[in-house]
Structures are given as structure tokens and as C-alpha cells.
Image 1 (cartoon, helix red, strand yellow):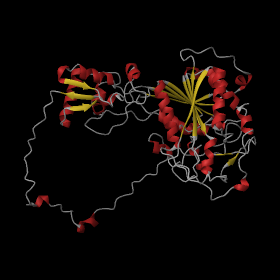
Image 2: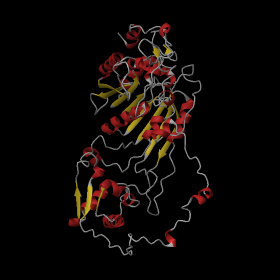
Image 3: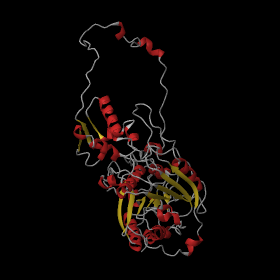
Image 4: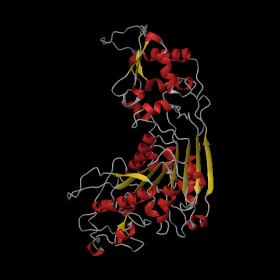
Length: 490
């Protein structure tokens, strides 16, 4: 029985006659549900050491914007092997997005365009722009996922985040054959809403009047978004994943993200709000020849390249200055701090050292280790998980003796210079009222990487205004009352 047949055979949902408009419950997530999905994708990509990623159904570029953020250091394979996967940086060389709606790709292009080049500070500063030490190519493509694009063969990691539930009935059957059967990535990441979670949005026996009835008519279920063609239970999703994995030579790991911060007031168990699946090719070192294209594949319109950006590396990337000069700067930094010990993390935050090392953390460690007996590199419990927490001790450090005169702080005498002329109520009115500097954050800005790309997609694609891409607008408002299904996590 396929997934659609199992949907039709599902247990009936209470009819709309039982709807109680006061039966809605508030469900909150911390972090926001869309943030949890992003974090899950990043964890898997870091663990697998991804270098080229295709975002299928990229929408307005929410995930692409996250993946465009530069790692902290120059790529070093030796460090990648010893780094704890939980702290491993993500060193992407190529990134691509595919979507069927042109207006969404216009928004995506804005968030993946290269920022102005980071400028090396000319003086000591605690704030500096992120520095890109590794170049990155970003491409955006317009087209349907059931159309074959030979360029995608070179992307070993693919992501379909909240996409499959938007696919029309005649396109969904081509998803696994095209992605797993033709492109054969090393790893495919999929997320989709968990229908089993939906009951927690209302009191028992109630259906949210703002929910969206199954538009296909196959079931009497109610969905979280008006463009969802289905929402699967955990058993249905697992069955679809296992069938696809078996058919195309993959192992699959099914899980989920999104647990409410509070228990259900009626004691009902809370499954994950979003289901996840990681498909790993059983033979990760080689790809079998691609099967002959199907009739549909040949007939489908080819993809159109809508944007191509190159994020250039900083000019100093890979160019090391002499080790003794780097070591001299380390001594200066420790003298300035008046401490003879520090960490690799603190040294890397210095305004000169990363540029002198050409972005190479290995260069910094080599500089310290070749400093002789005056230096010690000390591992800590934290550094066993995160290399940047390694302690650095300068044994020859001598604190500077303060030459400032000492004052008798116990003296009760107060001179005229000690009196703050504005330390009185009569001067309060002379100061201007503070301006309101609060900024309303969009979902992307709250994450810390994206831009304000809110908007409603225009018609295009499947004949109606349908978007099988990642739409932030249907995955947010996890912090507010879920009084409308449009605000529930998709």
C-alpha cells in the first residue's frame, strides 16, 4: 500500500460539527520550529563534512542564507578528521537552490548575493565583519524537480526541507526516482510536517476551524497550510522513506525535531512537530551509472539558471606571515591583556592574528608549538570537544608594573573635580529624550543571518499559485498563540 492509499484508509477525523471555536490551544517552541529544522540540517551537514549542497525547493532562500555564512577558518582536512562533529565548521565550496516560482528566486538572489568584502581592521577592535577564507559558488535554478539537470550530478548532498507535502499528486512519485535514482547524492535530507502532532493544537474532540481540508479529497484530514497536498503520520512517513531507500540502494534514518516547551494540558503524548529523514547511499564512494531518462524526464522543461554568484576569499587567505612575526603579535596581545594565558579562541578573535595566519588555524598552532620552552599548549575538557578552547600559556610572561599614582580611596575629602555637574535633578531636563531604537525582527533576522524577505509568491509553476519550496511564512509564529492554522509550524 503506498502512502496515498494509506492516507485514504486512515482513521476518520472528527467532523466539523464537533468544532469548538474556543477549543484552540497555545503551542510554543524554543527555539522556533523553523530554527530547529535549520539546526538539524547544519548538524547533519557538518557531521558528514559536506562540500557541495543543493537545496531543493529553496523558496525565498532561508536555508541558503544560513549556508552562505562563512566558516571561521581556512579549510584544513587534518582538522576536519579530529574535530568533534558537534563543533565542526561547515566548509562549503558550492551551493545551489532550485525552485519553480520565479518571484521566490528573486528574493533568494538577494539573500545569497555576496556582501561587501571584509576589511582588515587598521586598529584594535572587538567588532569586525565576518571574514571569508574559503571561496563559495552559489547558483539558483528555476524549474521542476522532475526535470533532469546534469549539473546536479556533482552535488553530493541534497536537502528538501518542508517540500514534499507541497508536491502535486503527479509529481510526488517522481521525487525519489529523480533524486535518489538519477542524481544519487551521498546524502539526502528531508523534513515534512507530522500529522500526528496536529491534535495537540486543539482540545480533545475539536478541530480547528482555521485548518485546511485535504484539497485532494483523498482523506477527511485537516492540514496546517492551504498548499499542502498531504500530511503524513509517523508510520506513513517511515513507510515512504523505507520504500524509497530500499528501491534505490540507501539506508535511511527517520527522526524528528520540534518538541513543545510545555506538556499537553490533557496529558496527550507529544510527538515531534516536524519529521526528518537522512538517506545515506550504501556505497558512498561511487555512483552507479544514471539510468536512461524516462519519457516524462525528456519532455519536462529544462532548468533555467537565474543567478550565479562567487563569494571571493579574503586576499590574505592562505598567505602566512613569518612565524616569528606572528609570535611577536601573540606576545603583544598577551601584554595588552596583562595575562600570560589565553585560549586559541581568544587569539583568533585578535584583530591582527587571523590575517597574519592567512586564515589558517594550523598556522597559529604551529607558531605556538615552535616557540620553544617559553610556550605551552594545554588541553582541557572543553578543548577535547572544541579545538578553539585549547589553552595557550606564555611561560615567559612578566606583568607590567603599574606607574600610575596611588590614591587614598578612604579619604572623605571631595575636590571640585570629583563633582559631576550633571549629577542633579535640575540638569535632567537638559538631556534629549532617547530615541526608540527597537527594530521589529523578521523570522530570518531573528535567526541572525537572513534578510527581510517576507512576501507572497505570485502565481506560477503548476498552473496555480503553488510553491513546493521552503516558505518561511508557513513555518513561523511558533512563539505566539496558534489561534490560526496558518500560524502553526508547517
